[in-house]
Length: 417
Length: 118
Image (cartoon, rainbow over the protein chains, first blue to last red):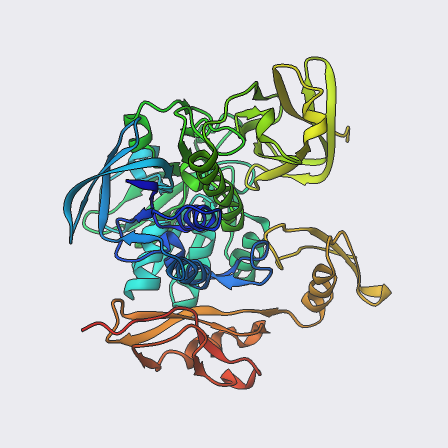
């Protein structure tokens, strides 16, 4: 019997296991399907990780390396090359591994930390032929950074998510010509700093409110057609631009990987595509927790770490001091807000502050984030700049939570221009 | 007055830099932003991250970085200089790959442990 089984050995799983060990759990198992710990960080060789958590700027492999060696300094057990097939509601974990074969392990608590995967061409239905040369940005990143292959020479990137922007720079540095980055929305989906240091530094044009409307080529991509779109994201005839290229990279969003979660009958949130969680990252089944990109897609690994440390601590508290019941507040999204994590708060679970992550649905300047309960405004936070591509975060003091009744709503009020 | 987006950290602060007032920076939320705003207009620098060949490891590439920012105009030269390097596993994080790369004062260092594979 394990105190805790962590599904996934990426940044979320490593931080959760570390925190649970630190809080006194002794029998912990991390199950990872790859051959090594660290998850996607291993292919994110660029820098900018760790500014919040380690107070210094690290690359992805360095960040992963730190956590992997922290874990190695504990008694946490790690099973690599092992895939979890099923997690049951009574916390039995069924897995199959290269070295161990099929195994069933019983745990007192489970942390779900499976991360997310990329949306593909199929998910966005681009018309045209089906030649070679169409990659998700993350797949291309793995080829270039880990396996040493350059997937193409003349590249168009669809979507301005961070991985797409990072790959625009990476492919350019490796000698490819990146012709354009095309984004269907009127704003970028990635961090501002990546627009500057990945596109502007290399004079790569960013076409906002544009999309790829056709892929041409028989064996290999030969051309892509890019069109402007109107407010409802429909292509405008007559605006077509044709790019001669051999490669199309897709950076069109990430989907939390929740097959195991759904299979266990855990309540999901259609806004995040992740499980609904309480303030301690516990899902609708007591003793099961979720953290990191499986819960909602983060921009920064530092936030994944802080959220996952909370999940690990909560798993330890569940084992050591039992189930946590109590009165629940529902967190709702009002105007301007797309989702919140957590979706529910148990007041007893909040010590000093309750952190709430959320995203806005449009670019806003000089705005106020309002936390209301019924007609009462219980907290206000001002921000000079908000964007959908940048996850926001507020810390709600416990004393203010006591003013709330049944539910709280987060909304955005933008100053009149 | 120039407007820029700070790239020091993922916050991406919207900076305003006044060239006439000795590159006075406003809109930053930390001292590093003020430093960035000034340096970006006077002599822009970047940390370069890439990979070099690696023998006897699980993967054929070892990720590397310059251990401090280098002038933006030297990025191409830095990339070229690492083209002919081949490391042999084991490699440790922080191992120096090229000292004082292209005379920038920065060392090119490994950013991951590459274990020896049999």
